Amino acid sequence: MSKADDDYDYLFKIVLSGDSGVGKSNLLLRFTKNQFNADSKTTIGVEFATRSITISGKVVKAQIWDTAGQERYRAITAAYYRGAIGAVLVYDITNKQSFEAVEQWIQEVRENADKDIVIMIIGNKSDLKHLRAIRTESGQDLAQMYKVAFMEASAQDGTNVDQAFIQIIQQIYQNLTKQLQKYDQMSHLQSEKLDLEITNSGNKKQGCC
Image 1 (cartoon, rainbow, N blue to C red):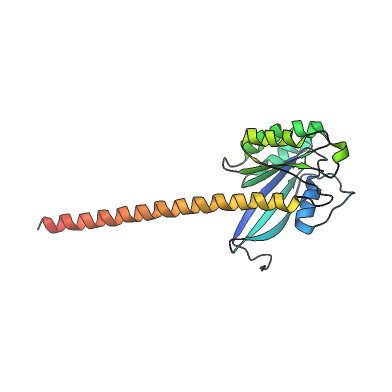
Image 2 (cartoon, rainbow, N blue to C red; image 1 turned 60 degrees about the horizontal axis):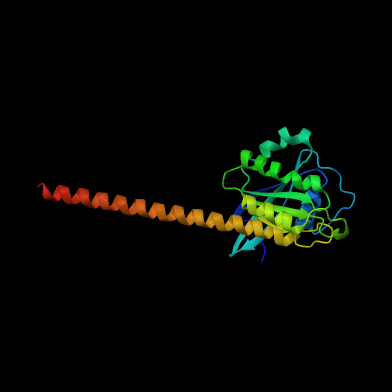
């Protein structure tokens, strides 16, 4: 069951970060349109695409921002972390340098985004097993060290792309639901306290006459 593109219950802003050439744009293209562009050009600045999914009967629209990986665009893209509640940090499993840069990207996200942002690391190009330079275990260890989610995927053949994005969207939704429940409980307690104060105030007035 789907709704119109402008009809949704929640809008989540998620940023894609990582070095240039790791396949961020094709991951986004695969997730939002189920397509792959072998001739994809380097992203300049920031682009975004959307996809809606249903979680627990609610339509969640993910607005995913694809940020440029080149150093000269860092000052431009930093502003786009504001308002993001999810971040996907991508490296190329055939490129050791892109993996080593992930820690820097994590630091950048945590410096520019909300402290409660949900982060996932994706090791892209898992279809290129014969060119692998980074072991799966290395990605898992890095994610465990920073207490973030991890998954290997392939934008080219689609392996784990939907699973990765849906997992981070579901985690954001779960966190949001918990926050709303906590807020409702606090509001209920404050309401009970106010009722009690009013009642006590009324009793005092009755007692003085």
